[in-house]
Length: 115
Image 1: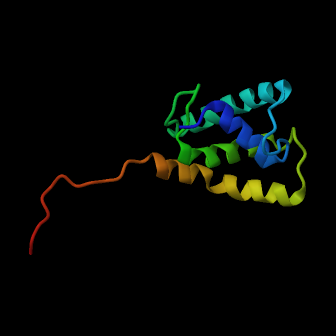
Image 2: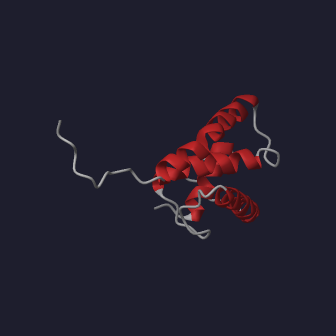
C-alpha cells in the first residue's frame, strides 16, 4: 500500500517537477493535496474509490492515480509537448485500469457440469 505522500511525489515526478531523491516543497505539497481531493472525488463519483481519502492506495493503482493527478495539474505546471502527450496517453486508460484492478475476480460457486 502506498501513502498519499508517495502518490503526490510520483505525480510530481511524472510532471518533471521532482527528481528522484528530491523532497516535495510545501507549496507543491499543498497544491497536490487539492489535486488529490479533486481526483479522489472524481473517482468516487464513478465508484472507483477503493481506498479512503486519506490513503493508503493499493500499489497497483498508484501509477494510474498519479497519471490522473498529473493530467489535472498540467495547467499549473508547464510541461513540454512530449511529456504532455505521455501523460495524456496514460490518463486516458487510467480509470479503465483502476476499475479492472478494483473489480474482484469472478468465481462460480456452482459445480462444473460434466458432459
